[in-house]
Length: 144
Image (cartoon, rainbow, N blue to C red; front, side):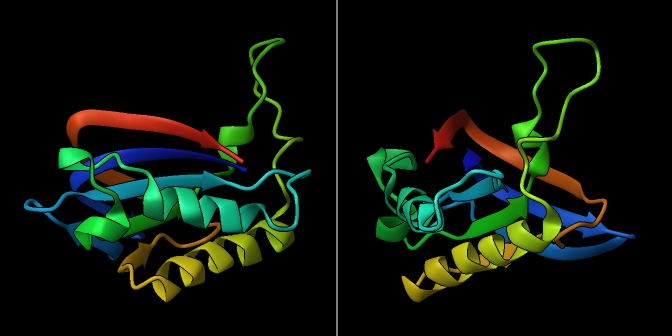
């Protein structure tokens, strides 16, 4: 599993002209979490991803989402598993198919909520427009 975590002051996801998820957190900051589920991920990799998203000390003042009470905008992003070593067209064969990836993304959302974190989501499988105001900018890559 791979994720790009970006510290933001606001972020939103729009599908077909409608905002389906948004966070606005100018005081605490928050995270835009783009998460890609891999074909060969361990069954419990989602738990590690929940822990990383919740506990990484990457917000202002070296606080975590959990410490700061900050929100997360969670967006499924299969393209994180694109292989580009050969040719000009990425290969998506390392990404988990939708019927496997979607329940994992839902487990991540539920796991974050179980920790008391406010979670907004994109729409799985939809063509989404993601907007964000990066804070820092501060972006990290996470792999489980």
